[in-house]
Length: 160
Image 1: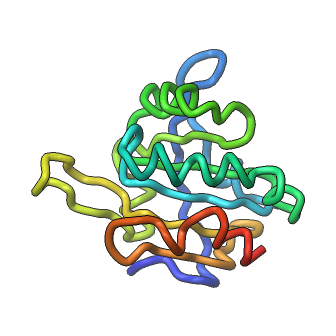
Image 2 (image 1 turned 120 degrees about the horizontal axis):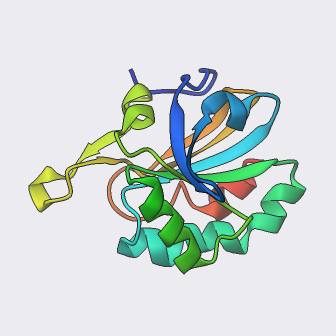
Image 3 (image 1 turned 135 degrees about the horizontal axis):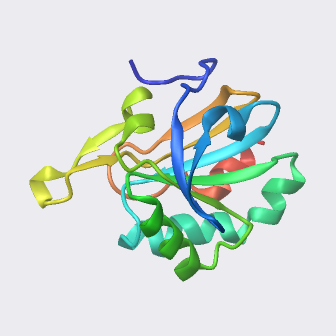
C-alpha cells in the first residue's frame, strides 16, 4: 500500500558515502524529532532530475530551512557512490543530503517504485516529495507521469 499523509516512514537504512566511506543512515536518524523535506528522483544524472529537481531544491534551500526544516534529503535508487558523485556534480554540499536506496528497499516499503525496464532503466523510484515531521508524513506530492510539477521545491515550499 502506498504511503500516505499520516503514515509513519518505515524503518530502513539508506547508504551514504561519508568522510570515512560507506555508512548506513537509518530513517530514525533522519526523521526522529526533526522536520524533513525528502524528495525522490528516478535516477541520478538523468535530465529532469539534474537540470530541474535538484537545482530547484538548491535554489530554495535557505527558504525551506527558514520554514523550520532541519534537512533536505534527496533519495534515488542508485548506489551511494553515484549519489555522492552526483551531489558533487550538482554542488549540493551541506544543503541537500544525497542518499542511495541502491536496492530500492525504502522505495518498495512505501510502494513508490517505477518499472523502467522497458527503456533499460530497471527498478526506479517515482518522482515525489514529502514533508515528514518526527517520522510522520504531513505532506506528500507524487508526480502523475513524467515531468516536474507537484514535487518541485516551489510547490513543497508553499506547503511549509
